[in-house]
Image 1 (cartoon, chains in turn cyan, green):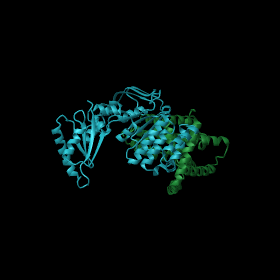
Image 2 (cartoon, chains in turn purple, yellow; image 1 turned 135 degrees about the vertical axis):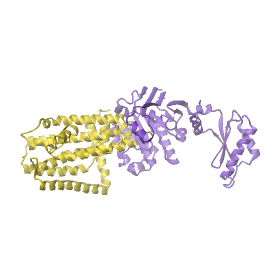
Image 3 (cartoon, rainbow over the protein chains, first blue to last red; image 1 turned 90 degrees about the vertical axis):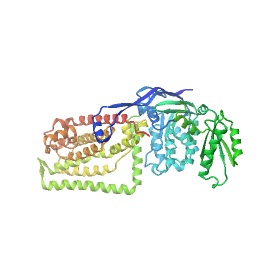
Image 4 (cartoon, chains in turn blue, yellow; image 1 turned 90 degrees about the horizontal axis):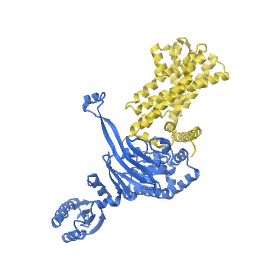
Length: 348
Length: 267
């Protein structure tokens, strides 16, 4: 497979003034030459193939935006090489822009006062899209989303969801090889989120577009990405399949039980007490299960079990002997928990 | 893939402009009120001018109609900056809010793309008003009409416009480097009001500033000498088309340099 994106030992430093406190300090800063260097991105390398969807994750301030800005050509790296689609992004930005699409969650790139269709027509000319390609693309769009309702409304009158949808369509309109999506589902309701994920998935499959997705929503990751890259403090913590990372943390699964029928029986206080109780008892009976963790979500009690330490069936048996169970579910460890563990330093 | 030449840009501009006008018309009240506002601005500007000249029939050897000539000339010369480059006024907001980044991902010239987004129709009214004033003054000074003089007029108007556009580009582009660049825009924009007076009425210090630092004297005074003082045209007037093009080009380069160094805000 062709490597469309390649980053080699890329670093980005920012020079920041060491600021002093107080009014006096601010005044002195006017004449200060006391800079410190901040490594926003520190020697990262990765390669991405044509057609991949890669989730680019990391806590706030980890260096995600900086990397994306370097990949889109807005920032020049301090050192290292970025080659994307055979070009160096920050050189000759106009030509590079022809082959990428960019969506920033809450910032629309469409003309505010115009209906989306008029924006699309201008973009068609701007990117010199052929009539036939344009028509094909519009046909593809309309097979996945309800275009008629969307296209004839001025962008300023759209809901956030409709706007994001139009922005994503606009980014794919010129059939770019790579699309950068920055928090595409931020602030959207559940239905809209899944609609947008479906759209991204379809476009990726039909056009074999490489997609770099940054997000804080693990739902996006679960729905779209097989591969994730996690960055924190400017360095890459993890770059591989999402399934593999789950196994790193042992054989975790979550047992969910419901210990009552009605809301009265399941009031918050009772559950909180139950949670504490259960963890103590379980750890007493199974001293090996040190990483076992009990928590509550809504009316459910979640027991995170490492099956290397204790069998799931034993835990269930134990609980059943103590209490009446009304409902049971078994879940794999969620991506959310995995990512949280990594952010908290679980890989070290 | 075709090369994106002049024709390409002209076509894109035409389409964006058509859409922009369409959408402006859809805000009907806004459109009517701003048109009325524009008419009143021009009329009140003219009245204050008229009152001054009822009291001082001439200033340093410049008579009423000659001053009117300068006034009309400057209004026309200021039309392009108003119509086509009005988005300079929003640049600061776009830069601080981080929205400017959206202009960085298009395969066309970023200066063009940015300016094409706003066409200020109010400038057209100014153009009509300026033309009437200039025509009236022209007639009363008995300048006559010939092909050479029309060509001269067009060249000097274009030159004068270039100066004003360049000044505004430079003033606007300061926001790429400075936090409080709003002042600079407003200050420079105020200075344009001096453009409609002959530079000789200022003392030599200001004359120097208005010629070489903030060259507003090129907006009406220097070019108008071609018509009003044809026997005594300074070298600067002859050079002004060249200087104008150069000045515009420099302002464009500075603007582009700012845009390229822009890296947005954190998200």
